[in-house]
Image 1 (cartoon, rainbow, N blue to C red):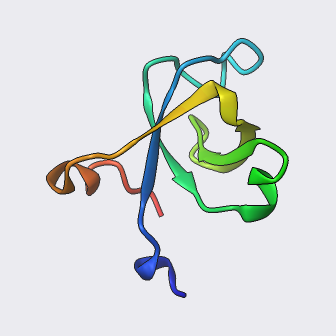
Image 2: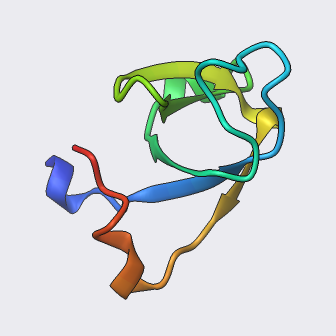
Length: 76
């Protein structure tokens, strides 16, 4: 499956206690699929650095953006 075939996912950050320089609470972030990370309760997030890193899934709530808004958030 190519990157264009994957559904783009987004989440709102609800906690950044351990990552204040990398994540902003109440900000929408793009989430990249990572089945290995999810087995450890982690998600792969494109953070403030513009790179993707693993963060605790409990720091995010998944959301679905309207199709018209999705293009404004895609970084890859």
